[in-house]
Length: 262
Image: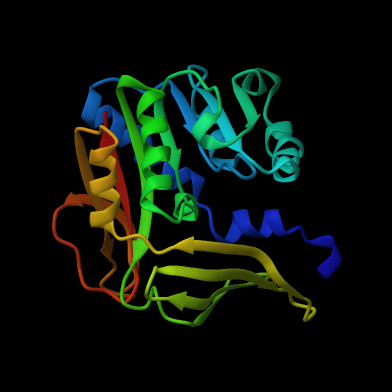
């Protein structure tokens, strides 16, 4: 069984909720702009799962998906793009490039999700990326990012989550408080006992929301808004409902969206 499961498939099942993500983008853009977004670029796209969900939503939707990893793009082309209809496939383009210099045309929406931009370790690198996004957004476009934190975020811990026919394991292996850089891993455990050890590895910086917003402003973005996730009173876990606010809860672990306008 272990040899038959693919780590990208397991990642999409355990980590991504592209339907909810695109719901948020569609609703927020229309609320801000009074029109429907038509073009989207998914940066650090991996398997382009989110971009595929975008083009499935409407025949008016077009998407570009950018990533440096040729192998993961090839997997996404075969397993995600390849499952779209012929008409949908014509409206999506996978680009193997640095997100800061992809050559992509201006779009309504740029996404940087799953904390992927945390891979930029310095303010200069992050500023350079945000400036590149600012240049490639339409005048009334929007930049959507997610972020995570909380007082458990810098801890060296391991968390397990049952995903039905496999177990998702998130490991924060090390954290350096001097530069806020950390090593994280994703492992998968299958029912037959197979452990997909370090299926994914992330060395990144644990950025704070104030840092992110300040660098967005320095990059030329005029406004930024934070959307905080609500709490389910029965489970005391996140309820998947994000509301704009300037005051969050001091939780051990939280996730939020940041929306920026050029």
